[in-house]
Length: 138
Image (cartoon, rainbow, N blue to C red; front, side):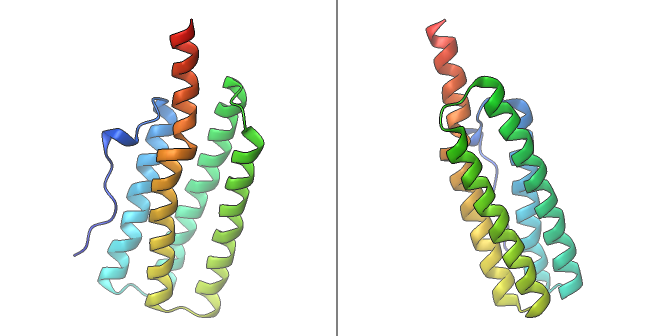
């Protein structure tokens, strides 16, 4: 069985609640990979995809609150990135319902794994850098 993406300490943004959610997202995306490997049916994949979608929505709401609370510059840009991913997730869900195929699920898995890695190492990492910058200056 192929494993999904693995959590690494280097992915931490040093905000425990955000890091915990990132780990949960990574596990959920890895589970999608596992379902693919097991040949899961449409209903099972959609059910799990809905779980990922819920986790992403909760994570973005929390992360945006953190960004506002710390006065992170570029908040609107981050919000637009979040909104774009949510639009993409809705489009993928529609595709799952209208035309379910393992290759399509594989494409969604690849997209989500790439997105989450990029999100943790660039976009969300700005939170940690901003917090540490303020601590280093103080």
